[in-house]
Image (tube, rainbow, N blue to C red; front, side, top):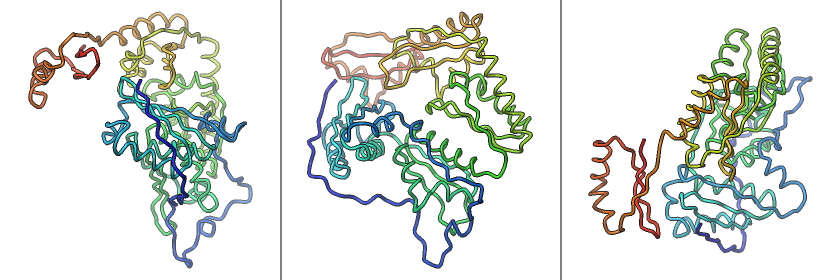
Length: 401
C-alpha cells in the first residue's frame, strides 16, 4: 500500500451552508403553520446507533482518530490520480476548512483509506467533505408529510445539520411556502440509507396514528423481511400498518410500526411470533471465503443474498466492507444449513481468476486500439476481462466465468 500524507496548514474558519432557504420576514414559520401537539415530545436522532465511531469519539480524549475506506468501485473518476494534483489540493482545503489532520493511502485494488485526526466535530465534518469529493454520490427523494418537516429541521435547522454531519449527506427540505412534501437526500448509498431511516423514524413518531417500537435482534430481521421483502410487504398489505425495518447498513434492533391501532397490534404480534420461532430454530455456522469472492455471494444490490434466502431459508451475513475478517455467517434452521453452505460455495466459485505472465510492452497489443482486441475476446469466448493493471511484476489478469 502506498501512503501519502497531506501536510497540515494554518486553519481558517468557514461557514456551514444552510440547507433551509431563508424567507422574507412576513412569511409564517413552520411553528405557526403546524403547531406542536401538547402530548408530543421532540424527537432526537439516535446518534450512537447511526455511527458507533461517532459515539466513541464523544467519550474520552478531545483529540480523536477515525479510519474509513472508499472502495475502488465507489471512487469518483476525478480522483483517480491519487496523491497528486487536484486530489492533494482538495485534502489540503478540507484540512484548512475543518482544522483536522488527514492521512491518505491507496491500496492495490485502488481503494482509498483515510486516517483523520482532530476534535470530534472536526473529524465528522472532514469525513463528510472527504466523502463528497472522493466517493460517488447518489440522490434519493422521499415523501414526508409537511407537518413533520419542522421536527426534522429542528430549531434553526440544528437537527438537520446534526443529521447531515453524522450521515455525511446533504439533505434539502422544501421551503416554508413550497407545497411540496419531497425531501431530497444526497450522499453515499450507506449515508442515504441511514439518513432516510432517521427521517422516516422521526416522521413516524410525529404521526397521530398508533406507533410501536419493537426490539427484535438484528440477526432475525432477514426472516421478518423475507426474500426480496416478500414477508414484510404481505404483512403491511394484510394489516394496513407501515413497517420500517432498518437496512443492513444500520446496526439497529428496533422496528417501527405505524398505522391504525388494530393493524399495528396485528403486525407487532406477527413480527414477535417470527422472532420467537427463529430464536428456537436458528443456529449459525461461519464460512471462510476469500474477500475477492464476496461480491459474487452478495450479487448486484444484494440480489444473490436474497436468492439464497429464498432457495434455502437461510440468511447470509457478510462482514463489514472495512473489516479484515473473511468469515461469512450463515444463519437458519440446522437442517437447512447444509444446502445453504453448498449454494454459498457455488456462488463464491462461480467466477475464477487466472494470472498470465506478460511483458509490459505487449500489453498495448493485447488491449488493441480503443480496447478493440479485448472487446473481441469478450465476444469470442464470453469472458469478462478486468483489464491490465500496472504492477512491478508486469502481469495481466483476465477474469471470467
